[in-house]
Length: 339
Length: 276
Image (cartoon, rainbow over all chains, first blue to last red; front, side, top):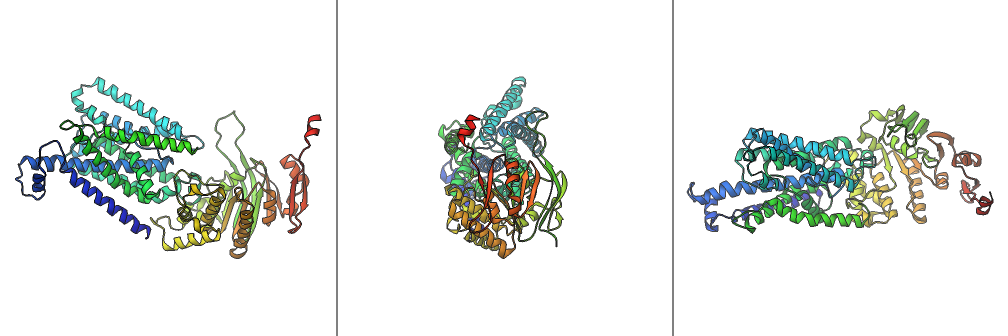
């Protein structure tokens, strides 16, 4: 099988799983809508003002799309950060980049930015600025002449994350909480339905981020050999790193702006896919886009049905899954003496 | 005839990490030499004599502060990284193993400079990789993850990657460091064959004076960034010069079969040292 055919098969299979998961999720939720009426809505035979139509098409469907986009974007951002730092533990929340983006979003909300199309772009710009500053700070703190040592990088991420979380707390404390509606729920990472206009913006930003990282995938494979080896093989390492950092920061920013800082998706999904499919970034980027969607969709479905009719934040579920994976990865690297 | 590689008065200094503390950053000073097509040039010298820096200069990882490096007559700094990598391949001492690529995937990476815009390698690229793996005897290992290979196997895989680049100049960094005797002999045989048949130019950087003397047409002896001597092994491996550069006593003999020079260290007697 040629590499292209293999990639097509993987994308086809994961796409199918995502489609099935998305369809299944349409039937799950706290509102009492029978499977039969969900089918009727999908077949277009329900009256437009019926409760079932509102629940399925205006609440569940957008939420499913947000979950799939956010999960995919976070997983691809994880692949990007991991290739960039040559460290399988790197990921938006671990690196503190998500906290930086969250600080940006809260700041943007203070300026009154909401979720109309233009305001959503503005909000993402704030988030991107936050992610960029946080990522740059982590890099400057952790970089040594010998590269980015694993433990220093993780500690720098924790420190920067704590700094921006504290800054968010300060903002929330001094501002009338009503202006930051549902901020606590959002800060835990939640997936809520958003209107079609902003949803399109979210999808477009995700596409740009994925394209930025995906176009560098082959070069990222070479970068895994170390910067010097990559240069010797003809890779313009600085340009690759710039593009991938911008792409990963943009994906993080978009997810934080449209869904909240959901942790660990960028750790779990690339790790699982790497075990299944190998370390080739050309395969991983697209597989992570789809696989991340499946994962977050499943996590969100669990989050909204576990304690129904109440809801958990999806970030709680992903963190519960992510913590043991993180520990396992850290221990296995330590055991091999490469940490 | 234009030499394959030519250095003209090359000097280099790393940016100073902090003024006034530690030792001064290492430098290459006024270095000039050429490598002809089909020549094997051995570069020897004690630790910190500039061997590693020289490899980084030749592969355009860093650029000279003064002087210039010409690759087939063209200044290295004016060429793109990919076009340098099409002609100069470096065999490092080892590869990092953070992400578990297979040997085959690693060798295919050597094809990158020939079509950097391509997303997947072509059939031609795969054929070149397979041929290179056959040459270094690692075709059986193509599907093995790198971290399951021994140091010697990995080194032959890395050599295959360099050959897959189809370079004009091969730069070897301690090529036999992880190889046992059999593969050392095979590596030397392969090197000589490629050199003789394909006219491949080779820069061999090694601590192993005897290997360098055996394989190289000429030797360049470096000390603290400057050339001490350059010429055929018989003239460079001179007892007095080596003793001055390495700071220990040596004797030089002739290899019983190849008639090349062989350097022996005269180990100090512990008793004499104690009595002082």
